[in-house]
Amino acid sequence: MLLREIAHTRTGDKGNRSIISVIAYDLKDFPAIERAVTAERVRAYYADTVKGEVERYVVPHLGALNFVLHDALGGGVTRSLALDAHGKCLSSAILGMTIE
Amino acid sequence: MKTIRIGAGAGYSGDRIPPAAELAEKGDLDYLVFECLAERTIALAQLERSKDARLGFDPLLRDRMEAVLLACAGRGVKIITNMGAANPQAAGQEIIRIARELGLDRLKVAVVQGDDVLPGLQDQNLTLLESGAPLQSLGSTVWSANVYLGAEALVRALRLGADVVITGRVADPALFLAPLIHEFDWSMSDWQKMGQGTVVGHLLECAGQVTGGYFADPGYRDVPDLANLGFPLAEVSADGSAVITKVAGSGGCVTTATCAAQLLYEVENPASYLQPDVVADFSGVTLTQVGPDRVRIEGAQGHQRPPTLKVTVGYRDGFIGEGQISYAGLGAEARGRLALDVLKQRLEASDIEALDSRYELIGVNAMHGEALSAGHTPYEVRARVALRVATLKEAERVANEVEAMYLNGPAGGGGVTKSVREVIAAASTLVPRELVQTSITMMEL
Image 1 (cartoon, rainbow over the protein chains, first blue to last red):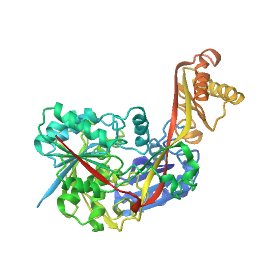
Image 2: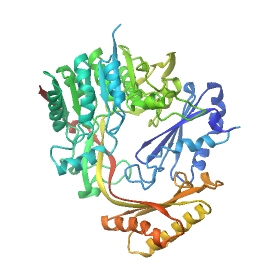
Image 3: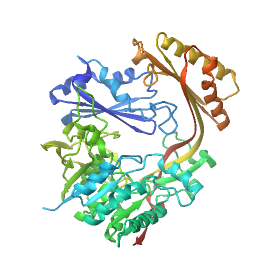
Image 4: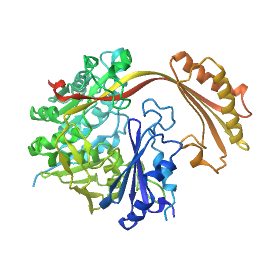
C-alpha cells in the first residue's frame, strides 16, 4: 500500500531546513505509519535532496509525525537555485512511499 | 461568556484580497489581522526604501485598506498588521491618507516600531545560527536586521485606543496573541494562556492554509469550491480555547485534517515552539470537529519565554542567472539532456565563476532529483540552468547562453525565458531582549 492511501502531508520551511508533516486520516492507521516512516527511511527517500540529518517528532493523539530535514533547501529559500526553493513539492513525493 | 472573533486577512504579502473583504463585511469580527512578512520580505522592502524614502511598506497596503477600511471602521473592527515592513511610519501616513480619501472622519492609527536593530548590531559579538560564523563576517553585505518583536508593544497600542495597529517585524502569532491579551486582560507571564493564544495565532497566520488551501488532492482530499476559498476566523474564549471557522457560504473547508496540517506547519519540535512571548507546547493540543467547518482547538501549554530574541539579517549574496528552454514530442527528454550537456560544457569552459549551479529538466528531475523521478517518459521537458555568481554581468551571460540554444543547441528548442536577479539572502542571530526598545506613534485623522 502507498502512504497516500492512509495519510496526508504538508511541507514548510525554516532557513535551510524542510519540515514535513505526515498525518494519518484515521488514527487506526497510525501505528503502521509510525513503524514504516522512520527518520532513516525518509533520509534515504529524499537522498537526492537532503544533505543533512533527519529528525522525527511523534504526536500520537493527532496521528502525526513531524520530520525536520536538515540542509535540504539548497542553502535556504532566500538563496537556493532550486525551482521550488521552499521545497513545497517535497510533501507530495513521500506519499509514494510503500507501507506494509 | 465573552468571545473574541479574530479573522486572518492575509497569509503572505501577495495574498488574495477578496477573502479579506468578505471577512471584514460578513465575519462579524472584532479584529482583522494581516500577516504579510516572509523571512526576507523586509530586506526587499529595505531596497525599495533606499530608492524612495516614502516606500518600503507592503506594496498591496493601499489595495487592502481600500478593500476593508470602510467595512472595518463602520463595524468597529480593529486592524492589526505587519504591512509596515521596512517603513511602518510611511505606512501609517498612507493609511491616514486612504482613510481621508474614503471619507472617514476619524481613525486612530498606531505605528509600532523597534524591530529595526541594524544600527550598531555589528558591534555586538553575535553568531549566525545557520553557519556558526560571526555576524561581522558578512561585513558590508548586511542590508537589514529586524528582530522578531512579541505582543507587548501591540497590546500597548491597543490600550491607547488604536483602530489600526501597523508595524514591521513581529512574530506572526503575536499579531493574533496581542488582541487576546488586551481583551481578556491575560498576564503575559501566564505561560499556558500565552501558549494557547500562540496556537490560535499559528493556525490563523497563513490564512487560507487552514481553510482548505495548500490541501486539495483530487480523489483523496477534495476541497469544495476552492476557487472561492474563504479565509479563517477564530472565536476565542477567555480561557484561550477557540473554534476555527470561516464565513458561511465561502469556499473551502475547516476540518480536523486541515487544522492538524496547519498546526504542525513549519513547527520543528511540536513540544517546543520558540516565540518571543513564550515557548509554546503544541504536543497536547486536541482538535475536535464541533460542526460543519467548525473545529475546536484547546490543550496547548507554554513555558517561560526565551531570554533572547531572534533577528533576521538580510544580506546581499551575489546574483542568480537562469534560463529555460523547452523540447517536446518524440525524443524530447534526450534532446533536453543533450541541451543540458552542451550548456554545461559551454559554461564550464567560460570564465564565469559558478558559486553554485543546477542543470535539470523540468518535467523529469527538477523537483526531486533522479531517483524519485525514474521510469517516466515525458511528452515535453524544459531544460533549466541556474548559476549563482558574484556579478550581474556573469548572471546575464548565463541567461544568454541558454537563449543561444535556439540556434546553437539540439533540434526543436523553443520558448526560452531568461531571468537575472540579485540575491538578498536571510540569516539569523539571537540578541538579548535588553537591546530592543519599542516605540508607538499615534496618528489621528
